Image 1 (cartoon, rainbow, N blue to C red):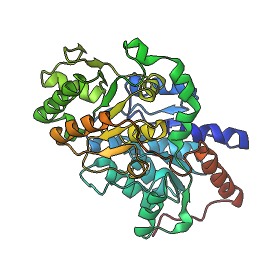
Image 2: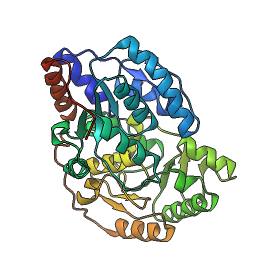
Image 3: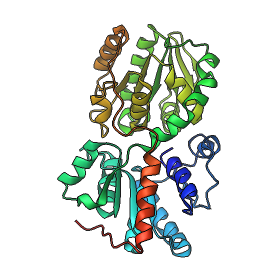
Length: 360
């Protein structure tokens, strides 16, 4: 979703895009379905890395990417987000002296226990071009003594994609397929290790979802990681229970957006879902101690409730009792982030080989 807007903006201005898919996300529900639904071209190269520990996965990506990078020989390497693929490819490209452009730079949770926080910090400090989604992200980079010449406040490319497909998603009528009506249900997503890897923690969170389900149905599309943990812990992983907790498999992007768009409440530990609910104007409760996307909180839609199940239930009940939720759209979340990024990169390419450095 984050790369789509950049790929689409590049062709009209005459830039060639070579798409490399590392295979870090390899489930059909989390990979191929997005290429199909977004209308993205098939990847030029698929590395097929698969799962593993953080070290194993990052190392395999680096070795495989290095071979492809030398063969393709691009002018600029664009990496998105904060996953292991992002850092691995940025490290290889920088060492091979290719300028790196990081899309979604500057996000900070200040929680080094999150692998994503390590990835994005390191990636930002070695990238030549840093494209941010908010002014807070710009400020984070400046505080870390990163030169302002490397920073561009472009907006949010994931929001570009959401705006493009929002109406198509609503036409799918996903809620109706679950027997649900407009704003008469909640949606939950959980996948972070701190929430799903511990049996007690996961069981308590599921118990809260069932409690909320007594007030209105809760749809819980289960992430493959969470499904594995539920199975290993002997927890229910399919069907619907008596308290209207509707557990389903993962949904495609368009179906999921259609489900979010008409929800009364969303409960999540996903950074992307925090942003999507902000654009859609849907109340969101984030089951984490911190967020790297504070703009979703200041915009009025998102509340970081921590991991205490009791607080989650109280905040859910309080949110459901509210009739109006004041919210505002973050600056430059206007569907043109991809265009701004491509305009900047095109101008850099016209200048000639980049003299930008990842130092400082």
